[in-house]
Length: 301
Length: 114
Image (cartoon, rainbow over all chains, first blue to last red; front, top):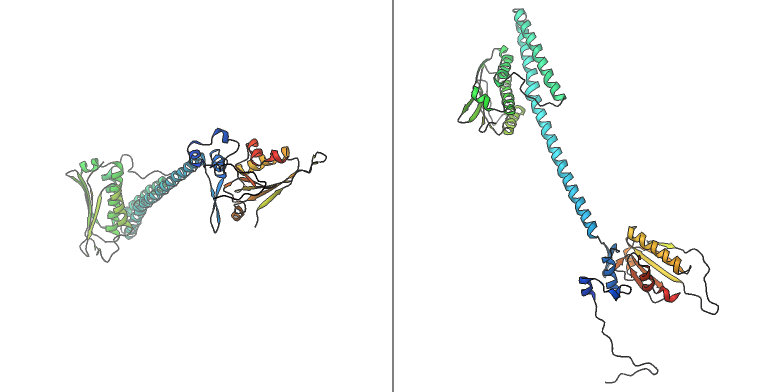
């Protein structure tokens, strides 16, 4: 088969097959003699990408053109590092928020179980004082003096909140003496108290655990006198088989767990404090059968 | 909206040899992807090359494809920045920030049209 050729045109030599070097160039980079004149636009693009001179690639389709930004490894590493830092920062912020929430809850509990109960006890005493003011003025004066001293303690407690100090059992005091003080504060309303604190149980507790036990006892005693109108209240702390057990029981009106909101503020705090020190709290009560609160700490210290 | 910036050369007298045809005007389009360091480097290198080698016989058009990607279709642009010599024909392209002056001159055939 012959091919007609135009007159005057030079015969063409055999066609040279130009193979693409893209695959090789991808692996090994451009050849030395291709430095100035790349064989194809694709190679020129690869050269420019390798030299870090390209910002973006354009992907063409039938409908549209899209621009894809190229990133160098340095930029990718920087982006990765920035993302990592952002993650660390976010985790730190979350931890700070959690710590703040815990601190807020602790303050709330301490104020509720500490100051508020103390002020309530002072109020009860002053009420009792009014009743005997005419018949026993000397006794009434003593009670007013006690109330003033108690308010002084409350002020000290509030100051410790303001200065950020954690609540703790005062120096020279222990759990027994503190519970005795609470009982004395409540006892002027004709409620009889039976307190039985075991020395070994008291020594088994850390200062933080002792404080939690004290606040739980304070809350339970306050509930017994304030809500349950109890005539007698028993407070005991024992250690049996390594388990420290605090029990506060009363003969008050009690309540039906199903009809009364047992997750009320005080009982909720008792439960929260028990969990904080790794203990369990059990509240059992029935109408006209009193209430019994038992906190068991299996691993003191 | 067509995103383009026209860069006009400073007016200079075109040197031409008596009897020879006047040198062709070079029309260049620089395609970029936004205001990036590489885009700025490319434009700065291009201006420098034009001032040094084209003696006022050029026109530069800067086209930002981030503002209008469709404009990439005209010259089938693959990577950015890309410089396209539209005139004189044939169309030639050079990809990158134009930092290799020798390569830009060879790639755009500027030496041959001087």
